[in-house]
Image (cartoon, rainbow, N blue to C red; front, side):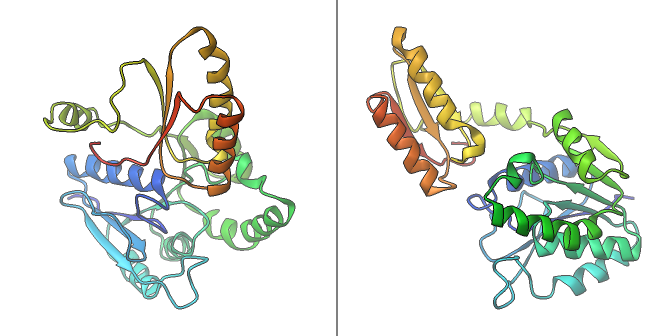
Length: 274
């Protein structure tokens, strides 16, 4: 009998929760090919389409619940789900109400649960100004950690993340399971005719692909590119959604100050086969 796995995240969209959403999309597709039944539970009405044969349940936000992504109706649904035989919860992220509610239901009703952090407890997450750091610390120790500390397994995607997570979950099982790349999907995309490249350039280029956020170190990439380009005719293409408009503005100012306007191009976000 197939084990039903329910994936819970606070936002299953291409723009606001890019990395975790794509991981869940690929993971559920992979599980489905191996006969594992998966359902995605998320909040709000902006969810992207679920993979083929994957269930998708969207719960509306409660009035005033946008900040914590507090959904209407999901608590009762999770409790009912947890009482069904053979359930497994896979919780993605730690800062939203859906994850908190799922962890509480799993603990209360004895459902095996995996918690994947998706980098949301990495050291850089705590370096966001003294006031925001204080708020996160208060929330973590009074609300989040008490709900998560009895879950079955904590997943890290790198050995370094595991080192960090052991400090947050000192008495729990922390396993390293890297994010995977679906090579079959890559081969299918590469063999699909008619896919237009966003930019055709004769010059060799370096490509950055990811959200435009300070944690990604794009400013360091630009600085390094400026130094190495002196003896090469490379271009730098930056592809991804703007996560922080202020940071993107600083990148453009940096490019102008280094005289790189003619060889650094922002292409915006691309998704799916493109």
